Length: 351
Image 1 (cartoon, rainbow, N blue to C red):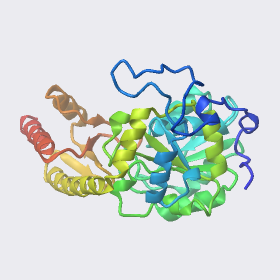
Image 2 (image 1 turned 180 degrees about the horizontal axis):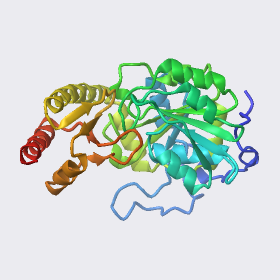
Image 3 (image 1 turned 30 degrees about the horizontal axis):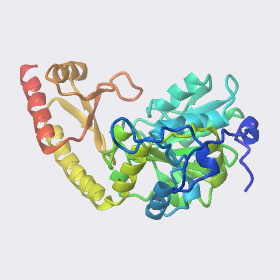
């Protein structure tokens, strides 16, 4: 496959920065090429050498878990880096646009706004489903990326798989990105299995949710190797530090622990959902395939402020399209959920 036509020509022609570790990727040797401190870090640890700029050890292990080739993987400083770079390599500022399906993850629009890329919108239906007619009407000749968040944030539900595939098939000359940040909490298959069939498909995932590594900032994008090559051209040379790479490798040896966390979170989600639905103050708990619950409350803003005052922090989504009077609640531990419910019940009694 040639480089897809939705990639900006200047990035196809770009000669990337060549780091010292591009010229020699071995782990043993006398390293006098990168102007590093030859001694240990001042912390007494071995942080004095630059890390692998392409994180090959991590990618090889991750590839075996995900069933893809290491050449189909991009690792970034959180999935936000991939979001930012995908817009950068496809969209001409002040000319092109991306299409989002609100309500959705806010960073798609923020990254576009920073880069002076226009944003088209095709809102979801009232039950947070994709409206294909609205999507097809919103796409135009300047659209370079169509973003689909599934499971969706903030609603928590999976998008219909058939609808996503229709979009991918209908627009082979546009990039379609499926953001699967919460896919570990779903029982449906990832779109990674479709990569070989659709060169315009990109799948984003993260280690911040089910894997419990939000503080280390590591996300991944999976795509045709020609797209990955462009991303590697444009990223900062050493975008994933040595410590994060080491911890990622360690985490990939503990997939069973991640699965255990997911199982426990799902059980806690269902019990929390039942407790919330039993409250008079609750108008609706929306279906979720993630580790969050979107809940429509009576007096939602007052409840939000009451919880905040008591140092229980949930997300106020009341001003987001289709989310009137809604708060987004992350599933916590049993103790955290119990404290949340105690205070919601207390608010209910006093109001």
